[in-house]
Image (cartoon, rainbow, N blue to C red):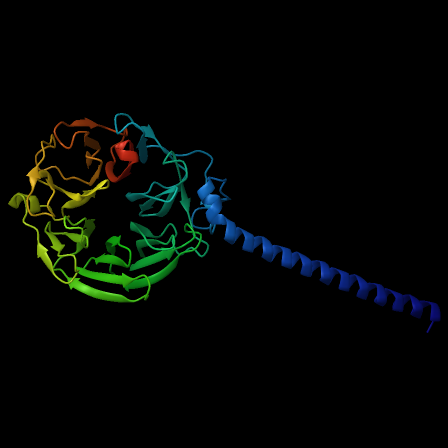
Length: 381
């Protein structure tokens, strides 16, 4: 062997080893930095949401933990009013497909809309809406979202239907992650409501389930003969436990005594009020929790004594109008029928009607805030 060539080969091997060691060290440093960066995103994302910072771009259903943002937003799906429903501005929907909007809620500083194509989020009071997918795509474009409820420690609970299963999700980081806590095949949960200790779930087969926030357990507390479509809490006159009202798909309404152990039917204001198969729309005044409102094919009714007595409001609704949504805040009443919004600013004494959107789609979801001055409506086919 040529000694010179042998020395050359050994030097190459030595140099290669040094470069390999250096490369491994650099790769290790990059990996550590990447892990720290990802951890920082997890920690800071809720604060970014709350502060109104810019969202990451991504593709709906595929960009985990990111908002989808097509170049231009679509109109004609959601509208917003800042003057109590007197005039509306068309919101921009940054989504490729047109969803059916089931519900709109404000939680913390963000606005959320549940649709048949997943979750929409707005950080500017409803002017722009973006589809949002959590990190693991638990809630994606194939998920129908029916309702939201707030829990302790900034938790948000979501009733959904995915892969032919009813699901209850919980998120504690503004939907960056979502964890299923309950699921059952072919069993939608159309309505949920919460108090300080429990989440109440109204199932499509009439079962009323209660989930303990602290024990993490589920319990069936009642079984109605028809599916539950709405759950509403009403304050007690005596200052005791709040009464829970359940509106069923056959149009009947039941109330408990504050103990959740027994439910009694609320006397309907009119027999014709229970003619709608899809159930009565039952809500309370957001700023006066003791006042209850019912929307039916016979009009809108109000009760100030936990549903014992009802007063029919002077409504301009068409005869047997099917009310899609009802919302009340500070005595201001809003109801949607087809593409029209009926509103009263004086507790139902006088009414006016507007058409928020130039569309043939029906108004479905309805959110009212800021003392009745902010009104957001969503549409469906």
